Every structure is written in C-alpha cells, then in structure tokens.
Image (cartoon, rainbow, N blue to C red; front, side):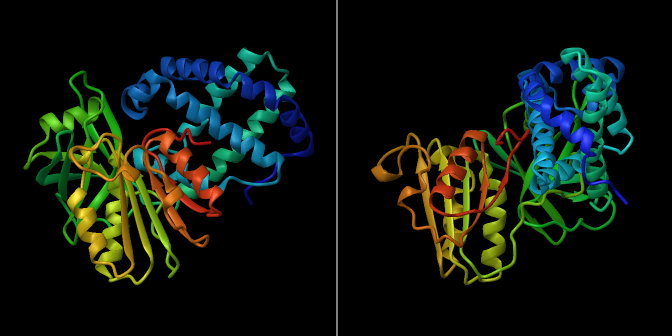
Amino acid sequence: MRKTMLSPKSTELVEASLPAVAAAIGEISELFYARMFEEHPVLQRDLFNRGNQANGTQPQALAGSVAAFAAGLLAGQTPDAMLRRIAHKHVSVGVTPGQYAVVHKHLLGAVAEVLQVSEEIGAAWSEVYWLMADTLIGLERFLPRGWEEHRVIARFQETDDVVTFVVRPLNGPVPPSQAGQYVSVQVELEDGARQIRQYSLSGRTDDALQFSVKRDGEVSNHLHDEVVAGSVINVSQPSGDVTLEPGDGPVLLASAGIGCTPMVAMLAELAAVGSPREVIAVHGDRDQFTHPFRADLAQLVGKLDNGLAHVFYERPVGEWPAERTGYVDLAGIDLPQDTTAYLCGPTPFLKAMRAQLLGAGVTDIHYEVFGPDLTR
C-alpha cells in the first residue's frame, strides 16, 4: 500500500525547516537544474521548456509545487487539484517513472548544499519528495500517453499572430478527447533540440483534432513559419483535467488572450447538445483584431437559450462601450454562487479572476494555465 503520510519524526523536521527551504527555494531550484542538466543534458535539450528555464518560471513552479505539497502534508491535506494538473502535464511530455529518481538525486543534493542541513532533515525532505513522486506516478499510470505522427490537413490564420492547425493521425483513429484538454506538440529545431509545447484543443471532428497557436516563442515560431498543410508533426495523446463537469448549474467560461481556445471548445460542446444551462462567457483581449475566435464566440453563445457573452478590450478600435474597456472585471456580471467557473489565461488574469470569484462567493473554480503554474 502506498504511504500517504509523513512519519512523526519527519513531520517535526519538515515543519521546523519549511520556512528556510521556502525562503531559499529559488537558489535551490537554480542549483538543482544546473546539476541535473550537467549530468543529463538531453533533458534540457528535449524535455524541459528552454524558454521557461531562461526566464526562471520553471524553477518557480517547482518551488511552488514542492512547498505546497509539504505544507499540505503538515496540514493533513493533499493538494489533489495541483497533483492532477502536474500528472497530466507529465504524461503529455513523456515523463517516465525512472526520471523521478534523477530529480530526487539532484534536488535533495541542492537542498543539502544550499542549506547545509543535517542528514536527518535531508531524509525528512526525501520522504516528502517520494510521497509526492509516488502519488504522481500512481496517477500517471492510468492516463493515456504516447506520441503519434499527425498530418496537418489544414491551417487557418485566426489573427495576425494566431494560427489554427487541423491534424489527423497517420495511423489509426483520432484519439478520444474532451473539450478543455490540450495536446503536446514536439518539433525539431535548427539546433537539433526536440522541444515540446502544449496547446489547447480549440475543436475536433470525428477524424481530426484542432489546436491553435499564438506566436510567442521558438516552438510557436517554428509552427507558424515551417508547418503547412501536408506537413507531418509529432502530437501526444490529449491530456488535461480541466473539462466540463456534468450538471445543470450555471457555468462561467472566462478567458484572456489565447486562453480562449479551451473555452471556445467548451462553448462548442455546450452548443452542440443545446445545453439549457446558464452559460456566461467572458473574454478579455487587446482589441477586436487580436481576439481569436471572435465570430465563433458570438455564434456559439447565440445558439444557447441561456447564453450571455461579455467581452472586454484594453484598447478597442472604434466605438465600444466604456464599461467594457480595460481588463476583465466580473463586478458588473451577475454570477450565482453555485456557478462552476472555468478560467484560462495569463497568470495575472487567473489570480485576478480567482480573487473576484471568491469575493462573489463562487468557490467551484477550475483553471488551465499555459506554462508553469505560478498561481499559488
């Protein structure tokens, strides 16, 4: 049976050392990654997002997840939503159980070097790590994983910097997916690195998947510039646990920028079945011309008997209601307290929406974030 609690002695040691570990987690993470990549350069080249390594967000995400898990153990709670999110990300990029031992070696070595902790404290944090790792390995065992070559059968320019790709497996049927999920796409760059990025599904048919990509980094640039109809790309099984839950209560779909992609897919799913639920779609963008799926949003909401759309533009072009200018603000939107909220967008947007929702008494909140999760 998998162990789910810290031993009493480790609990005491982790509780005493958690403030010091949390305070030094940036330095610990930096040293950890440097050590691991020196010994396993292929992980840096092919598995970890080089952009997130360069800007420091990956170490921050690691710090947040380890600290949150340790704090949860001390409080007698397990951060299930966080662990599910990490598990889906791991299988989407191909993390294997054996790689957890590699991380353990270098992470605990970095903790010992930075904080000069005793062997006892090191062993206690090792216990924390393996509790988290074993939980993730258990979750990942039951999730679909694997890569398939897909042919691009179409591509559409949604806005100046957003392209939609429609892809079909070269062999076998289209894998099952749910609105709100994402796929990983692996491309070979000019320097030989096989980098991986996740993109939300913005739609699907019986024989094809659709995902949309905003130009904002080396992989997205490669997809925009090099991948055309007829190209073959490596695509993972669909992953992600932020999907529409069954029920008949009100639903909020709130997004900003390219975060609209999973929300449009959810909206399409609700419209396809003629859902009678109250559906509130909220989106924020720079202006009308940077808003992907603008026409789809209006069309899909129009198909719902109880659908409403609220769109905010920071710098709208032409006439636009003053109360819809600027960042998304839920204050003027009627949100029943039994609303189930789904959010997707940049970290500042997610934090602001979560605070506004909790202030309005809405607590059933689900979110998807592109890149490392820094919302804690």
